[in-house]
Image 1 (cartoon, rainbow, N blue to C red):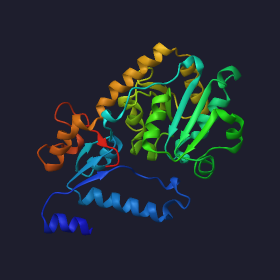
Image 2: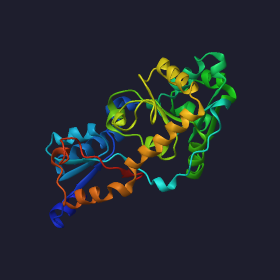
Image 3: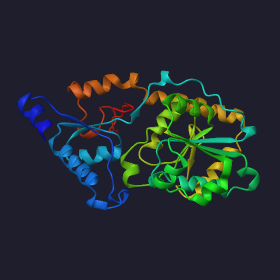
Image 4: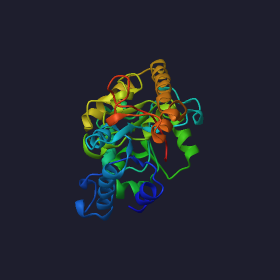
Length: 304
């Protein structure tokens, strides 16, 4: 409220709010009584009524603010493609290398990934290795949905790196065949947009995921990654089976398509659009572009 008062009433300049997420009560132990959740919803309420215009991370959020007659620009996570080197994974003949990078919560369905690996036929199962960067085994047990038995059953096929540097994450992306991201449909997953996806694409690492949020706009099955039918264990198993059936030439083609798609998230291409929107030089009524009635889309630099 104080920021709005200074900007609008004192300095008399328009206010643009950047909205990155919309939490659900089910994400928190105390539901709607969680102080963070209450603050989050209060901020969302104010953004929709006090801001002159909104930058939203997804079309789900864009539609929410458009109903309040706010000009809204959809801006998914942004990357600098120049930060990423060429991928250099080992041959698929030696096995399938998967990577999850980040701090997983229950929403990330890591348990479905592990169980999907365990349900593969023994010969296929032994060819899969999953690296989790960002959490130790103990942290994963406390914060995610991983089951101790499943972790123990996979043994050295499952590697926890703990918290690592960004350079290490980039190195792991360059060595992996697929990054994995399994999330339930609806709610938080639809309102947000996982920054892991453009980062993985920029590294030339295809993604193994199910469609949530606006991911269907960027990830086509068999092109930039393998799209699962859903977030269930059997869906994951089928996706892994398809990944294991690829040869090196097919994977490299998919990697090339991933890097090509990453240009849609590079900040250089869309900085003028975002600048024009924020400064009022471009008008995007109710989140629509001027060309054909589709939501205007521009990438966001990670962390901003």
